[in-house]
Image 1 (cartoon, rainbow, N blue to C red):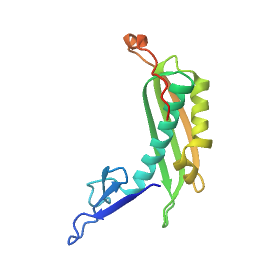
Image 2: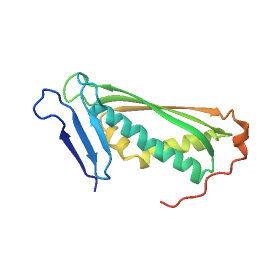
Image 3: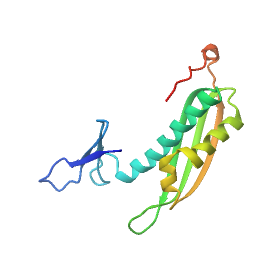
Length: 156
């Protein structure tokens, strides 16, 4: 079960700042554009999607495909409906991977499996939004890292 709590920070002021506490004890500041002291809740949905797929992809690349990933970013852009509830209508993900001799097929398979099978956030969002995914592979420029052994397999 996933749990969370959101609490208003300044009850007697007009601001709408909240502190979110996750069930695992982590805290996040939530705010609106006017207050600008924390992320908007809808931004956290975009972050959740990028994070969910990033965990899936890097795990599959390192454990299943034994790829030497040295850097990985997932960029997300989302369009919203003009009227409330302003759900995402289109989402664009760009995976940027850096490593040593990364296998294009392995990257494609990992992204596809994340989108089609593993990423729970993506599964919820694709009911309302068109999802477009692209990726880039860059060769690691630091040759001294090439001799670092691949990570050990970790059981989840």
